[in-house]
Image 1 (tube, helix red, strand yellow):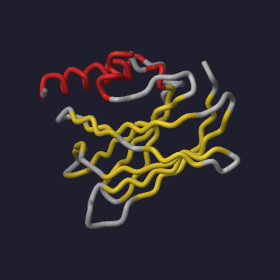
Image 2 (cartoon, one colour):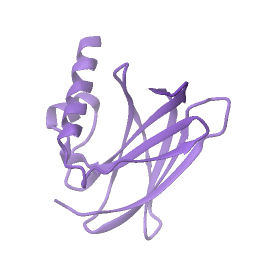
Image 3 (cartoon, one colour):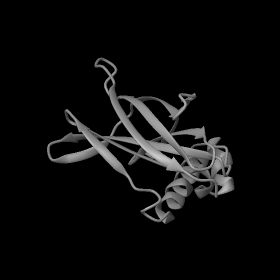
Image 4 (cartoon, helix red, strand yellow):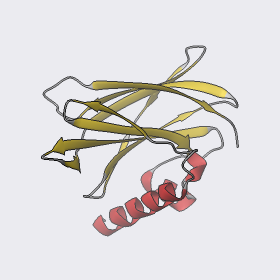
Length: 149
């Protein structure tokens, strides 16, 4: 099972690395000694076998949110685990709660959530990211317009 998990993670990262940067623009915010990196992209960018292996539904009307957390320590940045929760809201206030799946490669840790959209729809994404269970979560908010492919 461990080999399958590593293989799946490697395929996911390879698929994500091939996506053109304008479509997968990654942003981050800094809080205390953490960097929270996030981006949203179309679920069809992930290959079918990889999507199935990690339980992601591919559709021309589904998008993914990718979150990773780096801890800054002694001039270095290392991936850390976090509790990640999120929701996607459209402009008429319809809310979808996202369940995030953890992908752990050892040298990289990602959290993937998904939501649905209709063509030419602006979605407001709100994330609560809690790298330290003894401290409050950090909130990250952004908007992105999605189109059916």
